Image (cartoon, rainbow, N blue to C red; front, side, top):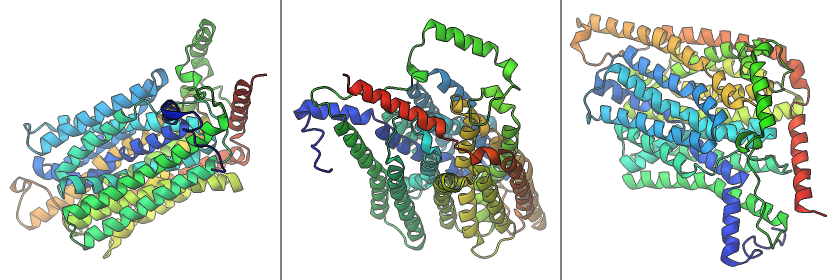
Length: 579
């Protein structure tokens, strides 16, 4: 690199290698690589459409009961307030370990139930298991995503797009791995999502932590390199998904495909090592160990008694200042943010948008079945949705950040456009034609994925980063509420009503069959017309937020973070070059 000496040889032998290795593992870029892997395993909830039929068949559920399980999955996946509050008072490693334990416990119990290794659980027990397993996703989000946003605050839109993109791609990644390890066995997929994400969190538990922000001129360029790697990975998985539908793969072919996926997942490691090597060489301290970037003092540094007194004063006045809110972009308290008009509007738009999208995702397996597609094709729909979920997250992260920087294009307006797009995908299911489910899987996956980074970025920009761990989890509470009403109370009963009509035509009753199944275009028509209408209303609601925040987004919303980074850089320069 420009004739610079190797970081190992410049510090001498084995001790230099050891010090450099410690520098890499404790660096911001390695922490980001570890976050990518954890997020790549944190999307097991998006595979519900693959293994839900196994639950329905083995436990004899009707669609309403299965949708109730789907609601508790969504409830667990989106109610992350507990993980946020725990993260406010405990280190990141503790948050990740809790998530790891919850993930394994919840999904392992589901696997035991579906495979008949334990007595058939009650419905409420299955609801607890899937809620517990899905809730672990929030601990991964809080541990990896929130920490990374704090470490790279000036590029938070890009950061959120990348990290949530890996989560969106997670379903397709796990599918490739399970096909290689277990073959075409949907029950074994539940076992895989029990142990693999848990193992990833344990392996990288000590490498993910908040650090002081140091300004790096080529930071955005590095993020684009990560982006290119992830795009190639997504395209490879999409090609494999199509080939696996057209051609019968041997176990060796599945293993080869999964190996290539794993190689792509580890390419960011080499980028991280390269950047940490540059950082090591720039310190130019050959006779001393490199200074390690310290953790964010607001998280890990013990505070003096005076600071604690100030905290108590701030807490006691919290309720007095609920309606005395700061300017947008400054640090709101939790109550100030939750009771603000901006948050309430965002909550309503999220209820409509994510609630409808989650309902479509959870019912995708049954939608394919009702329209006469074979099981193998239905799995292709789920993989397509997962891949385009990734592209939606990447698009909303990188494109919204670029439009914001160049043209002051407000993020809430991007969210409005995404919700309008989602309406089209929902209507394609309400009024299907041959091959329309392929198109709707792409549109719904893209729009669903695009919503999450936008919501998280908007919350961080409007309400600050001080209580971001809690606020971003509170911001998605509308999602399970929307899922419950739209999935359990609307879509499930309407599907079952059509299925019972089919039985009545055959002269049969509900007790005549173990599994209640509806076949035909009428099964989901009315439900998805309702979902499309509600999503359209959500898009109109988000336009109100666009109007309210247009002046804020015309300003320089990242100025204070640039100032803080420059101050930190100057401080480190003084400490590294004492007079």
